[in-house]
Length: 586
Image (cartoon, rainbow, N blue to C red; front, side):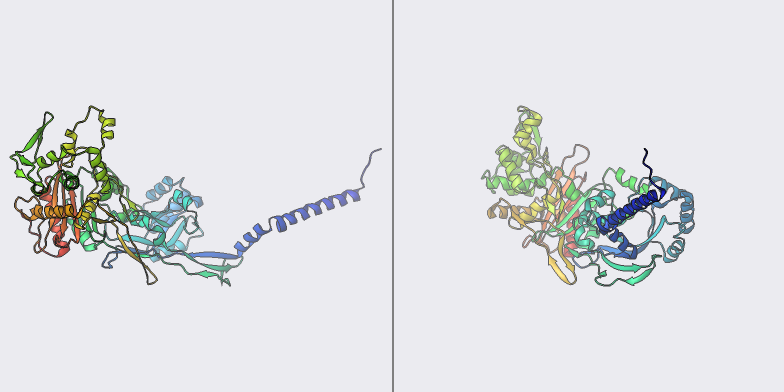
């Protein structure tokens, strides 16, 4: 006998099942997922309006701005919201005067870039922005965004630049304070002090109706003021920086560093050729990018910190310090009778002065830059011990300038020679090249400037830096930097300082072109052979020698004699700094 439910029972069971299902879904909505739906519902009746923070300004030591924040209206395309690219391109072209083909090309190139809206044009006038905004419902992919465009008044590598946040940067940060279209420091000080410069965004929480129309601020903590970024006062002199940039040759790479040896504050740092950082803020045209990346002089590289070169004769002061500290020589002892070079190991090592310098002691050798004298020292040098001395002088380390890391220097050891040349592949003859700053030794201009600053500052080297202090809400935050002591006695330091003065002012000087009226200048020339072209030119100066204040280093790739171009440039820079006339003659 088959059991058969009555229709009324079937209906009752169906109603009961539906009721149970309804009860289950209500339980899911109200209990299990209640908080989630509550959050969604709340978001439907309020909006959080982010308020941008003013990015901090970088000033020079005279409170002249090096950066500015220029208010701007920008037009973006949201690739995710494009339904008809042809109509979007035609609309933008008609309002901005950009050829339709360019807009179409921009959309095509960014067809897979759906991380953030793509910038079409910045600095759009208000009238044009209003016209575009009137059609926002027809073209939701076109966005008008008010923002502040960063502007740079100097083409300086160390300041760096800001650019649009990349997808990788956005994923890495994940702190909620960045929007996908925000700017972020990419290199230089802009990157080092990004957190302090950017400030903190504020917000307003407003109520909206069913049509998303604003009803006003919500109650209870519905507003937070933005916190502006810190302003930074640097140690640099904007006017001096600009003058030096005009002085340096434009047809090759060159470096000029002016540093306060008493504090480590960098007054100027120029690396040429330069590039315009403003082109990196909102994007650049393809021609400009190709020009700078194809330039063999590498405008993107800050050669003051990021490149290492054979130092030539400016390295002789390091050798002299080592020889004196290890009691290898006496400063007034006649060590050689220079006849234009020496024969060593079956090879002739020439002095730069082919007819020789005659009988010379240490002071003579530095003043006249006699290679033969230093060849003699090479015969007494213990290579590995000398390596440790060079290392202790901080010439091989990556020197941090604020948080910008510089390139490391290089000096070989016997182990390095054995590995690269074989145990019988190198001789003491290699040392004859090293002691005159040739061969395998490579140093950065910054490390040489720091070493000379330590010499004239009685052995104390202050860490080089750009930032003096920061300001926010009238509160000043000072920055303190560490210092180190050169492994050189005061007696040796006094001898080296005397030699620097004589190299610029005494008879037989090589640095006479760096003299300045009424200022006691000391310095050392350097010319380093270059296997790929003409000789590199160096000059390091310090002034005034009776109470040293600054060190000036000038380096010119393939510049020839350091006694000529770089000494002359150093004299002009010193003249600018002290507001005196350079003498500019030997």
